[in-house]
Image 1 (cartoon, each protein chain N blue to C red):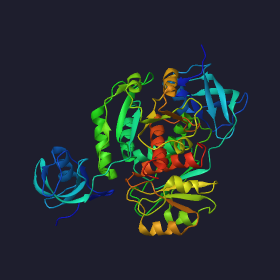
Image 2 (cartoon, chains in turn yellow, purple; image 1 turned 60 degrees about the horizontal axis):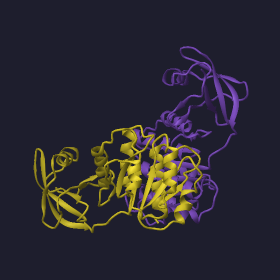
Image 3 (tube, rainbow over the protein chains, first blue to last red; image 1 turned 135 degrees about the vertical axis):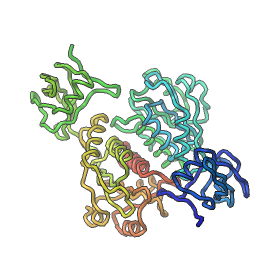
Image 4 (cartoon, rainbow over the protein chains, first blue to last red; image 1 turned 120 degrees about the vertical axis):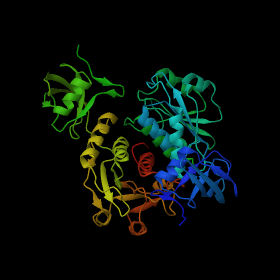
Length: 249
Length: 249
C-alpha cells in the first residue's frame, strides 16, 4: 500500500538541491535515503514532499530503492515558491548546544540569513558552518518553509559594520544601555530589510556599542531588565520583529 | 584577597531557602558549596549575591568553608524584593531537552509559574518536576531575577479548564485555526493576570480547541504560517507578551 509519509509533526518534507518539476526524477543521496528507508521505513510508491528553495513544493513518489539510494519522481506541485520576510540574524557565536538551537529556532522563526559575527568578547573561536547549515536544513524541512536560510561565513565586527548594506536596518539588542523597548521602536520604524543583532554571553564591548550607536541604520532596543542568554535574546527579538513588522502581523 | 565572585555572565548569584537579613548566617548546602568551592574556587572572604524570593538580594561573605559546606553571612542588601509580571506558562510536556529549554527560557523571559498540562496528543507521559525546578533555579540565578517560578504538578487538560481562575486570561497559541496575530490581539487586550498556553508537537485535538474557544477567558492567537516546535512557540509567545503587555514595554 502506498501512502504519504508522516511523522508526528506532519508530512515528511525533504530539502534537495536538484531541480523540481512534473516528471523530473532525482536521487536523494545517501543521507536522505537512510532517513527515508531506515528511519521512516518508506517503500517504493510512498510519497513525500520536496523543496529546493526555487521551484516551490512538490509531491514526489519513491520509484526505486536500493540499499543506499532512493529515486524520487515529482508528481504534482503542492505550493508555489514563496520567501520569508527579509530578516537576517547577526549573532556572536556561542557554544555548540546554543548555536544549534539558534540555527534551528531562527529558521523556524523565518530568517533569510544567519551571519556569525566575531566580537571582542566572543569566546568561541571556531564557527562550525556545516553544522549550522545542517540544523537550518532540518528546521526548514520541519517548519514548512520553502527555503533554507543562507549560512554566511563569520565576519569580524569591524568588517561587518564597514561592509554593511546601509539600507538594511539593524535591530541592536543592547543589554547594557538605555534603549527604547523593542516593540515600541519597531512600531515607529519603517518596513524593509532588517537584521537582528545579538552579542556574546559577556555582551558587546563599550567601543562596539559606541560604534553601533553612531550608525544611522542601527536601531538600539532593550529586551527588559532581566539578563537573557545570547540565544534567548536572539529568539525573543526575532519573534517580536515577526509580530510587529514581519509575516505574523 | 577577598573579592566578589564573577563568571563570564556577571556576578555569582545563588538562590537559597533561608531567610536573608543583615548579619544572618546560613549554610549553602552541599550542592552550592561544591559549586562555590570547586567550580568557582571561592575562598573565605569572597562575596556572592543571595536571593530567596522574599527578602530581596543580599551581598554575602563566605565566613567558613569545609569540604562539603560553606557558611555565608549577609552583609548588605543590594536590591529590594521585586516580582516579575503576572504571567504563567501552561505547556504540554515535551521530551527532556526541549523541556529543559522551556524551563530555562521561560524563567529568563520572566514567568511566575510553569504549569504542565497533559493533552490528548501529549506523547511524553512522565513530567520530571524536580528537573524543571532545577532548570528554573539555575536560570533565575543567571538572569538576575529575585524569584524562582513556581513549578506546578501536571494537570489533565479537562481539569485545567474546570479549575482555571477565570480572571486570568489565556493566550492560546492556536497553530491550526484562523486566529488574529498575537501582537494585535494583545494590544487590544486588557492588562492583568495572563497565561501563555502551548500544545504538544502534534498540536491540540479538535475537541480541545473547541473547548478552549468556548471559554471567555481564552484569547486565541496565531504565530504565523510556519510550523513552530512546541518550545519555539512557547518562547515566541512569552517574548511577544512581555513586549506588548509585560515589563519590556
